[in-house]
Length: 183
Ligand SMILES: Cc1cc2nc3c(=O)[nH]c(=O)nc-3n(C[C@H](O)[C@H](O)[C@H](O)COP(=O)(O)O)c2cc1C
Image 1 (cartoon, protein in one colour):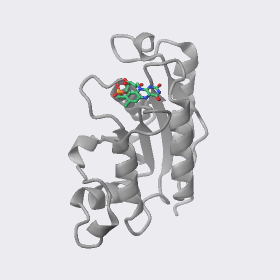
Image 2: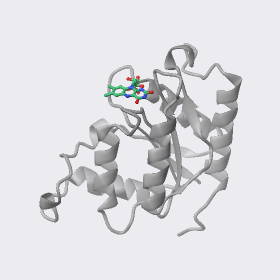
Image 3: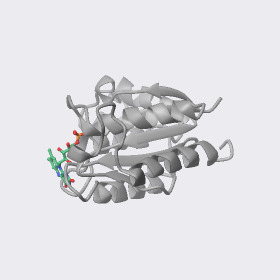
Image 4: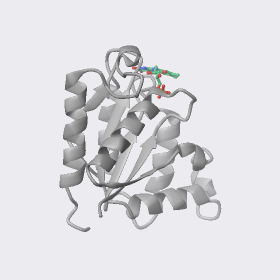
């Protein structure tokens, strides 16, 4: 069975990205994927500093890297901060990128984001796609950016806009059909 982990780049209460993460998780399950929902709150890591290597690598980084390596799909919904990525996401991915063997070469990655504004995290997603690709990940092409968040979801957390619903369908299809060929 195809397996997935889903993550949210915001750990704040009431996160709009968490709404999208939960929605996509549900859609992956409907597509027959065995999904494990993870919270970055359970993977605390100090700010990355090379001096912490190799003796003080957080156990969270080792554990999360292993989750990346052992699942077929990694889905991450993240906010945009100042046209870039939140420190939580950068710090987590920085630690993960130092783990061996590479945690980026097995899974197929899907990225998405929700913003309070109308630009719908396009810059954050561009940075994230670039970072992941440079680290060796295969990121599926769908650009799933949602914004403004205020009008985006119904009370059950489902997107209201037909175009966003279509993109969710599309990203789930890509995530379940693309493969690294068992690498
Ligand atoms: C430090 C900071 C910087 C932000 N910069 C941006 C930005 O560049 N683009 C944007 O669309 N929203 C920006 N926002 C607003 C976020 O889109 C908004 O806070 C969103 O709800 C965060 O996602 P979350 O609800 O999942 O935590 C920023 C918010 C913070 C706290």
